[in-house]
Image (cartoon, rainbow, N blue to C red; front, side, top):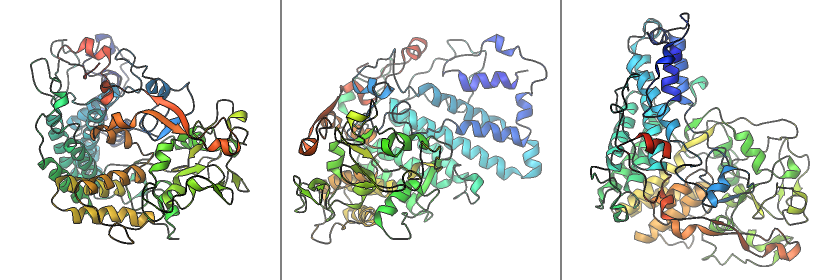
Length: 580
């Protein structure tokens, strides 16, 4: 009889194709059997909780996830962290940083095992009834679909294992699998999300259940999946014509299908039509407070899915000023700073309010008359910063060479661009006093769904007016004029698509979207390479001279991460991602 220790080893530690060694059966006789686990409520719930552990905590963007520091959003100060290796192109299948393939498959296999063994749980049936078993199975199905999606977005076409478990005594030949095509993966994952949505509760009404899967979360991730599938990287991408399995199966669609955009739009609208979520607005009606509150105010009306346990305290530390107890190193690039609109709702290229050079009351004119999201997201030279537990009096931001938080006084802890990220940083966290503000890490919110819906409609081309409504919902909450008002003409066609992309870049900044967006749009070549910031080796006016601060390595292979050489050596039917 297999023991729980054996099962844990098999489903948590082993990779996709690895069979269980016989010595793992040699465990003490007093260990609880896996059959007993699934007859009792508490151990069953603990098993499910363990499956949730694979939900990514993306608060660590320097050593755990690379989605903001390897694109035109942020420069991470420290060369000692893994992100630096990615930025200089120092990665191969034999040494691939941020490798998530195996971890997500661990979660997939655990979820499958859970669904196959929870039926008939005696204690749950006696205490709660069949409905709770069904809900738990729905949660496991949602998590399995989520992990497949996370593999798909990082590695491209994945291996679909289905509902059958791989036996522990399977031979090497028995465990060989080929990659499914991208479209096959999308169909399977979308169906799994939809099936989970039928069972899951619309909302979790009790605080103890916050962070668990819901109907809205399942439908929202399905909508994101279908948006990706409709995008140029996957929809008729003839540049990937040679990407095939060993049997010749085409892995990326070679024929553009406009109807994929319609399907993505319908999926996003299904989330909206739940009428369960609304854009968060602070009681003060201040757009800066509203935008900051989306990520700082726990479990607010906009949050669809979030991870309860996370390392956001570390995000706070790494973003905050050194003089305020932080490590001073998560630095927005000038490209990101320039992406924010002016307060008249126009881009800096279009607005008469943008003055650029010169100073007004000690603030560089580049930073004046910007939209509220800029002031909610970026710490810049000369502004003031005050946090509840960080500092009693306002601190003037000094990121120039000789400044309080500049390079001369910072060791390795200084901004390489002359800016720091403010968005998502709690003013209540202070490393020096050991205070850490707890809140969930938001992985899905309504603002994204509105932009997903608008983009899919605009790309489909059948209802620009509807797309504009939801684009304007986001702008209204941001505190800037809506298109079609205040001298801003209503865009249409390709111009509308670009406006939605521009809005998405700002609204979802530093939330792990940009890396995937520029790839699915196939514009990544135009945004990688030289990245700019202020002259942090200068003081006075010299500080405000733009210069190259980094050059992010890019080649076409980087559209997807490589499968590890270890997986390739064992997977006889596997093909490597293009360029690797």
